[in-house]
Image (tube, rainbow, N blue to C red):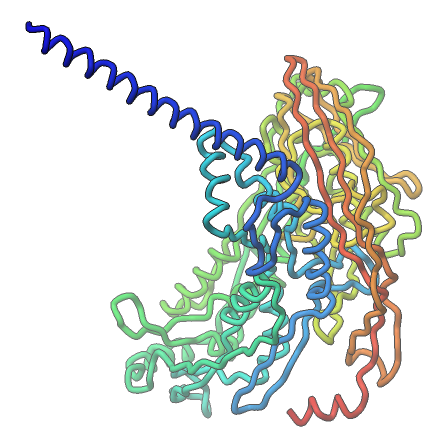
Amino acid sequence: MTKHHLNLMKFDIKKNRRYKTKISFYFLAILIILGSYFFIFQKIYALTIYPRTYCCGNFNLSGLELKEAEASLNSFIEKIELAGFSFQAKTDLGEDQITIDSQLISIGDPDLTRSLVRFDVTTTLEQAYNFGRDGNFFKKAYQMISVLTKDRKVDLIIDINEIEIEGILKENFQKLEKPSQNVSVVLNNKSLELLAEQSGFILDYQKAIKQLRINLITLKNEEIQILAVQEEPLIKIQEASAVLNQAQEIFDSAPYILMYQNQKWDLPIDKVISWMKIEKNNLGQVNLAFENEEILNYLVPMAKEINIEPKQRRLSMIDNRVIEFQVGETGLILNTERSAELITEKLLSVVREIELEVEKLEPDPWPEDLESLGIKELLGRGVSNFAGSPKNRRRNIAVGVQKLHGLLIKPDEEFSLIKALWPIDKESGYFPELVIKGDRTVPEYGGGLCQIGTTTFRAVLNAGLVISERQNHSYRVAYYEPAGTDATIYGPKPDFKFINDTGYHILFQARAEGDELIFEFYGTSDGRRVETSKPEVFNITDPGPVKFIETNDLKPGEKKKVESAHAGANAKFTNTIFFANGIVREDVWKSYYRPWPEIWLVGKEIEEIEEEIEN
């Protein structure tokens, strides 16, 4: 190799070294710049939401602390809730308008006051705040850089009780509908004939509720027009002539009898005819059928005569010993679904005597040796006070106590309070209270059961069990102070649920002593220890002006106070569970209570009533 080649090689090596040095310098400079950016960025926004973050369309959250953002967002939401949700419909049969309050308000018991729409502001803002803070370094770095180039939208989390809202809308607007009619079978002078089909129109409630959701996500509360849609019959008279002979044969073979053992019930032929319908099967063939829902409703009084609730075995703790105070007994239940199927099958086969399907219900089996259940010691206790409760509320609490006392919760079982208290109706011993729905008041059952929910919540907290479902009340209720330690329930939702994660059975003991409700859980301790902080109450807000709700249930101009004012607030406490193996679980329970104005019912004036009648 010549001297010239050696010099060239040395030059290339030096050149490569200078190049690598320059690259390293640039790379280091970029790292320093990025590191400085991240450091300064995190320092500036250490306690606030990152820039270019929006909620509800154009609601700017940039640079706001969580408490500040929550207070600001809640102020908008409170105005919407106070105004209610306005719907309007117009068809060939007239027009009408209704404003639905965001809450269903109980006249006699706050337990039946519940939200039709719940805004989960806390979770929404936590999602906004955690952007750029969750995940590994690279994910956080990417998200922090991305806020420089594009806006980020966070959807407001909303829970809408669509079933109840649709029910209220139907109740108020169904007079403006003319549903289509399929060809039907009718009785005329002791013979059957076909009544021709009719076209019609119905209101699209589902679309209106979807629009409500869209409006609320963007914090708009405009009046929603419920649109009418044409509805055509599915079956026409020329397709149904073949089933008329079959219907006539069923008519001519009357009477029909429903039976169970020695009990018999006449089935009137006019009732059978009212159930008849003409429908198409999957192959497009037109057949005679019966309205299953109407048959099920017809079976309700028979079920009340036949049904015998099984008596579950129930236990009690006396002098630290488990005893059985209620021996289990087999029950009976009318299988209404299967019985309705049998009625349809037998009628189509022209069978005059129809045996109903009745099943035995056995109580839950337990081991004969009660000691093997592992019920040895007190795990947790919950207490609440219901002083000042009216008569019906006290009765409902007593019914709830009776249903819960002595229940056994299996290891790993998710216990549902609604399921344990169900059915919540007159037959179970519950008493009703009036609830305002639109401009009407209707009776509903279940007042006082939130006292049950709250006491159970406190017992579960003190036992350190896993809570899988809990919802606080819409506003602060005196029965459930201190704020934040309550749980509202109303079947089927919201429910209160928890999981028995002790590895042993838990015995539920419930009792009332004077004005105190006391729930106790017994089982086998696994050594866990519980510490609960005192609830912190903050963001207290004024309840706002008095609210008046027009009603047809009072004389024109008459007024009746149904609710006192309650200040709005947030509440928070921590439940810390220390396990014997050193594991620590920290549960933070947050509650938001909306400001609640004083509420009065006001009887509609004569002119308003006359206008409604004309429409």
